[in-house]
Length: 160
Image (tube, rainbow, N blue to C red; front, side, top):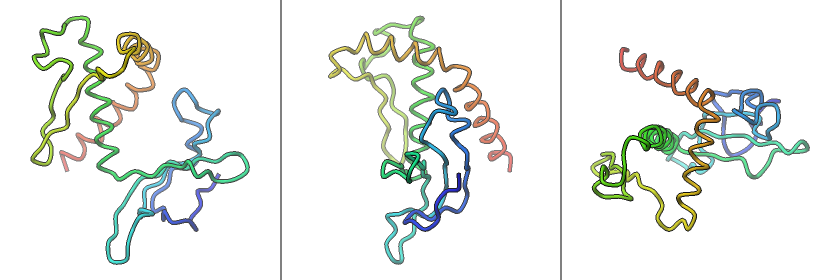
């Protein structure tokens, strides 16, 4: 399915047929493509780039298609990686190993920090942590494949 080019987001680089590789939802998803291009929120004289996940209902392109700035995508990737590490280590560590518990880590960024913590406001945190951990294990092959690809590309970037 061809990604539309007549909308506010202007695709420059596209990955069509994303529905074939959309993780556990492959071949059963409304996410039909991903594009990198000029952001839909651009104002005259101020241009940003963004990534967009294109959703299609079967009849038309969906308003639920998502567009994210690159830095937010990378922040999400960092959060995913830190979460994966936390859940891998959690059986070998306990609360006393995290002095600021439920704060787990601070990652220095832009003169500030991205905080990484458990959500104490979640009434079902322990139960939800178990479910989250089960999903990480269930999807380990899918996630690890993508993380290995990403690691290889990052190494390539560092060597260029």
